[in-house]
Length: 371
Image (cartoon, rainbow, N blue to C red):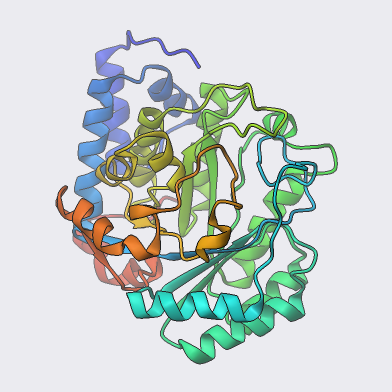
């Protein structure tokens, strides 16, 4: 992705001020910021984003315990290491008891949100997942449950919600239909992905979406569409991270995304939607040694250490060399706390529901919901 670093200073300043004050830009404005990205602009955006997140959330970083419950997937996404046709992938599926054991360990470590993530595994039926959700809620009634299980029917989403699931993460991957087709096989549908997000929101989930930064065939224009989609959809959570190729996928030879561009976009997302829960992702920590810290300094406020059984963590390899130990693991929470403290932040065990801030803090920052 090429950038032209000769912007009109007055136009650039106007766009930055408008974004900060109104939390919205036209598509052309987002594309202009991306096209004319520079270190100076990134620093200005990061300062504005970090200031805004501090006014809403203080210096807190919310932690979520990530449990990767299955790497079996029926899909063949062209970028994903657990795609169906990857014969090199060593498959696994956690039992209900293993999932509950992960939650028990996480609870003892201080986690109050559990993220159950998997490939689109046909064995994870509504009956099986509802049973697990109910048992987690019975044992840990003060905890939130986030699901990231891919596309399901609206009736399935409803049953999982009724069983006690609070949140659902479903990355839209890209807001451009043509770009979506370049990243997915013909049997997957851009319209279905977008409808799934609308279904989740209508049911009442705290709903998260997101996209890869630097994914193959991505342009400044498609990234601008992603930002505009976030602006209009207004997700409770938004997960973005750099594209990292996997050696056993059709896109294995494509270049990886960029940590600096990811942080640049994190800052813009914070300014677009001040309340959103914005993770500094494992992919960002994988592509840069200090990626986690850079993400937080750019405006992110969530980290999801890995709570999966140690024996399977390497098997959930969506991309090459994914981190899952040290400060990336739930057991490394003390190390993570030290790393956050070194940049002026502290990790907290609060569930961190964005909706809880709607009435109590919006007036304090002079924030008005965009029409």
